[in-house]
Image 1 (cartoon, rainbow, N blue to C red):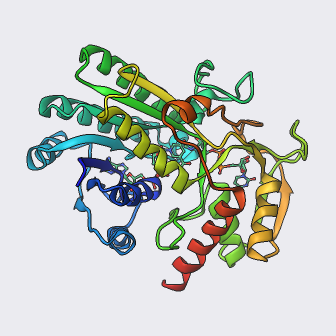
Image 2 (cartoon, helix red, strand yellow):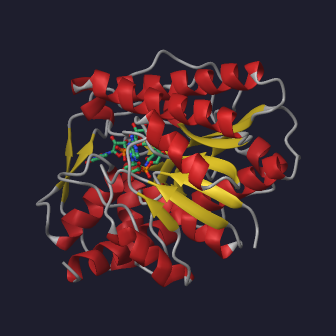
Length: 343
Ligand code: NAD
Ligand code: WQD
């Protein structure tokens, strides 16, 4: 049995897939989640997939005393993967203080408690949103951080800085890796876990699968007049299972002492850009469903195009995304159908 890892937000979309990969690699996993954006049954599904039930603590990371209590109860935690955060860009514009409080306080509480308990390794969920619209594509980790487009995006920038400053102050006793995810989509091949948006989805993939299933009437494609080959926006979509595996590589790197500096940042994408219309085409091909969509106006705040230079992650983490856009859209569709059938 390998080391024990604390996964915050472990019943969420990316967290649950990462927990499955960790267990698959022999790690012991402890989850903390307040279920503000996920469901308790995900713990059962993780057990169904892996044959192992992870320890599950339901509480809010904003409660510093509870965080301390957890590290007291689980004294052998070797590393933390910190997913827990509020993540809806549009909502963050409406309730910025909720976003600042949740995303910043949770990280601060964790770091303080880790220091008190001698826990030395943390992986942080960052985002390509820190780049805004990059001047150069593909974007690499040295690209300038642009003024944030939303309070959510700003929390990712500030959290990276909190981490950097804290690590510096710990003089070698704390190591951190920030993974800047591009656009995670898709679901576990079992169809047992996947993205579970509450209410009307903001993101493209769940909107596509819900439209195909008949829950939404029509998908709006936000603009076809961008300066891209087909006029729709381009993103670097990455399969959530590939993304989950990048976390294992990051944890292994720090625990194995292979990190080159105490704070490292890696882009996690495929290195390929797909347009909105190309994602729709892939979905229609793999599902056999004709999608009802129409081109509408641009969505405010959208950037035109972005995809990752993943060279550093490929070389340093010895990790590379393996799964194709068709794997992503097909697994998302399988999950949508399975989930709806059991409701
Ligand atoms: P998610 O909402 O599915 O998962 C986050 C989990 O954290 C949820 O289960 C939620 O209940 C929990 N949580 C939130 N606040 C908490 C708190 N104070 N205490 C305890 N639990 C709390 O989101 P996700 O898509 O899995 O994203 C995970 C992380 O990755 C987030 O930090 C997000 O900002 C980041 N990220 C996501 C994307 C994306 O497109 N999904 C892209 C880039 C970065
Ligand atoms: C993808 C493309 C839309 C919905 C967001 C966050 C980012 C990161 C990932 C966390 C865009 C188009 C979408 C729809 C559409 N999250 N679209 N119709 O905006 O790239 O990134 O998630 O860190 O911070 O901003 O993802 O899935 O919303 O959009 O045409 O109904 O699909 O315009 O081009 P986005 P998305």
